[in-house]
Amino acid sequence: MTTLLRIDASAQRQDRSLTRMLTNLFTTEFLRANPDAEVIARDIGQDPVPAIDYRFIHAAFTPPEDREDWMTERLALSDALIDEVVAADIIVLGAPMYNYGLPAALKGWIDHVARIGRTFSFDLGRGDFPIEPILKDKQLVVLSSRGEFGFEPGGPRAHLNALDPAIAACAHYFGVDVADIQTIAIEYQEFKDARHDRSVSAAKEATRALAQQFGRPAKQTTLHLPDQAKKRTNQ
Image (tube, rainbow, N blue to C red; front, side, top):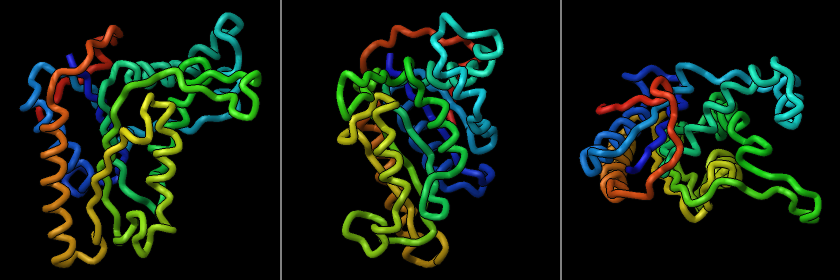
């Protein structure tokens, strides 16, 4: 059974969010092509993950066997978020570009998922590259919307694009190789002209095709999440 983890990071409401339109479309087409798949959905845009603080850092870097009760409680949400990533074969991120970079909600989610001992190991014996990912073999789909245009490599605003490089830099925490990231983006949102209309249509077509491509059986996951952590969606 294939497991899809859907993360929505837009601060917009459902009816105004272009990235949710794309994640809805991806999920619908994915399930149509693979009806036995499991979908885990988490909307961090509407229910943001709290920022990490000194207590989180203290708890995360304390060995599990030495943690006090408050540390376990402080890491409970992080553990739940990581369990969802571990269970997933495919991760789809609804990631709008805010001020050329990550939405705060998405940054908060990444900070909770990037955990020593859970998603990466750290060993100075490896020299100048002590970090090694623990998870692997996952696919990442980034469905985005940008107010302007030309953020692709070689584009007129490529130098302003801090969103795609940030996601790629952190992808190893999710078990994703950079080569396994697929990005589809709506552009010209602020212009609201024919170019935007064409960009929306092209993004929807590409999203539908990609979901159908992924909509085939993948490896069986061995992790079993609590029922309340799973949300089967037919949006």
